[in-house]
Amino acid sequence: MGRRPCCERKGLKKGPWGPEEDEILINYINKHGHGSWRSLPKLSGLSRCGKSCRLRWTNYLRPDIKRGPFTLDEEKLVIQLHAILGNRWAAIASQLPGRTDNEIKNLWNTHLKKRLLCMGVDPLTHEPFTSGGPTTRPRSSPATRHMAQWESARLEAEARLSKESLFFISPPTSVKPDPDFFLRLWNSEVGESFRKLNGEAKADCRSPISQASSSTKCGSVSGVTIDVGPIAAGSSTPKSSRTEDPIMFDASFSSSSNESEDSSDTALQLLLDFPINNDMSFLDDVDTYATPPQC
DNA sequence: AAGATGCACAACCGCATTGTG
DNA sequence: ACACAATGCGGTTGTGCATCT
Image (cartoon, rainbow, N blue to C red):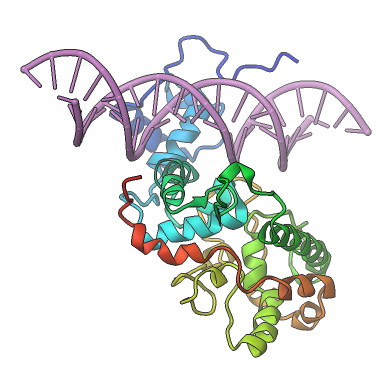
């Protein structure tokens, strides 16, 4: 194999960044953009590997980083997104403007995971522990199965939309799978159809996500709206090539509502099939545990 | 006051994915 | 189609600070 180490040059500095290094990096990027991360250190005069520079910039120096403690709403959103997306921190971070995947990962590992455990909720499955504890739970619980069904529905709709995008999106660039697609799907026509149909039956219009919270409104997650705006508007911060290149769902996708409305009966059926009383009602208690209990 | 312990966060490592020739 | 380079992502570790004993 012989994978090349990321920093083949010996003598590259490691460990915490100093203020001078930060300044050099900021000045360089402001002046030239980061360009190729690999060549950046050489060009800027930093004794760091490109990877380290990229990490420092994206996790700390970027001007749009929101610093400071997470709000309760942000924490709830992270929990709910984690229930859907799992440990896909970058995808979760894309829903929290100004927050980095690293920050969210740390939040999860240091606070939220423990809080859920204290609440008797398995952080892996987001479901209450049975008496036997987390490990004795069968993996294929109804909620887990529905997550899988959602994923299937997502993939199906995604494939279909990719096809449609050839007609509705200009320029006709290929649509790549997007970590945020699942969320946008919910905010899209498919989700809309679900909300309408399900709403008639239930006089409610909560998403499978927000169904977790009994007090939520349409398009919100425990009072926190999952806003796809920044993504659709392309105002999200530069991320990986996988997360940028957003699909324009606002105008172009809505305009194809006819296609979307009949989109994938299977997918819609799966959406409709999502259990009303899933096991995520614990999220209502998150407020209670804003200050973690001693456990 | 000093050492031990725990916590939070920044940074690193290595694999996965994507881009390019 | 393939190989290689570049980059992104998630898991893990290291470090500094706060609190406890």
